[in-house]
Amino acid sequence: MTITYQVKNAVYVNLTNRCPCACTFCLRQNGATIFGSPDLWLEREPTLEEVIASVDGWDWTKYKELVFCGYGEPTERLDTLLAVARHMKEHHPDVKIRVNTNGLADLITGGKTAPRFAGLVDVVSISLNTDDPKEYLEVCRPKFGERAYQAMLDFAKEVRAFVPDVVMTVVDSPVTSPEKQARCRAICDRLGVRLRIRPFES
Image (cartoon, rainbow, N blue to C red):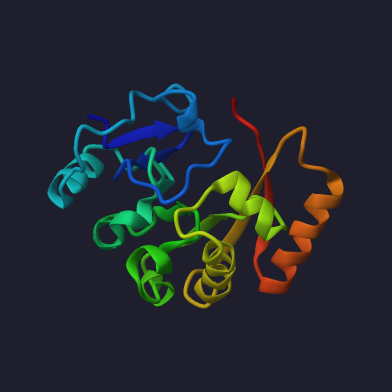
């Protein structure tokens, strides 16, 4: 069972298979690996102790970043995520902590989550995906329905007060026009976060 894995100069943490979205472009639609990683489908969710043991098994003189990004949405296990981040801050304070998320933590947990990231997370990367709420429903297929798009935007705006670097991402694909990317950039500018156009991975 793969709890942590390497991508370039970062170690990624795979906490869960659960995700409230079923995005049409998601890598997990195509198999159980990412960027040559081992099989990421978890037989069960690892305990906090197992996650910390796996994280501690890496030589942190060789890696610059710990990233919460597996085959599920990491904020499905927000308590565990933050406990591991706290452990890293205590033992390896020079390592950056990044969370790759769909931005639906508030809907997942039923409460405001942005303040909980303070002092523990250095970068939050949120999947914006589109400038259009209707298209978001069609492409991301969130179980929360129409509430999801605005909740994601609200989280992005709120978490910037607690995390130094907040970025929203859009997948660069044949159907993502420059005009759409410009509208997404305008949304990010309004929220006070930066936009990253990330390459489509098939």
